[in-house]
Image (cartoon, rainbow, N blue to C red):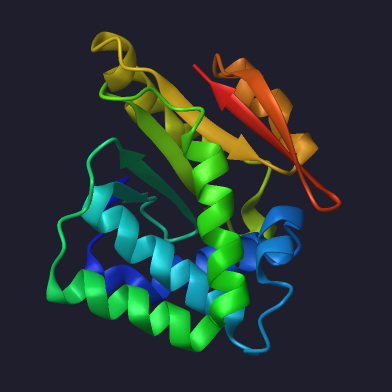
Length: 188
């Protein structure tokens, strides 16, 4: 496992796009966008955001990735402004508003003025799923946060992932209904 950098963007976007192609939450977020590349656009956006707010880990054979964010707010910079305006113009105002409203609902579950870590996204190429890669990407961060007594959060709309997260010590703290989509907010 290694930390990803901006040069790994295409690899990460590919893994996440293939992993989340049928994800109910991502599809709901993007349903109003007419851009045919909307999945790659949002995955590129969240990758760059996680580089600025946390850490991105890739496994050694580029088949799995985990994006971890922290409580840190991203500094306003040219890159920040460019990324956000580019997302808005490429993905559309309705989708951007939906993403912002959803983020607010999610982040309302997080501690205010305290440290935390969020598993923002974790993806494994479909042909490599079920081999323990997601678990392996989670273990080092879980151990670091456990040592520091830092709470960890994640959200999933895929109910088959709840069991994996439960085994890692995450418990459901809230369920959000977003359209026909159920989002499970979990904390460890």
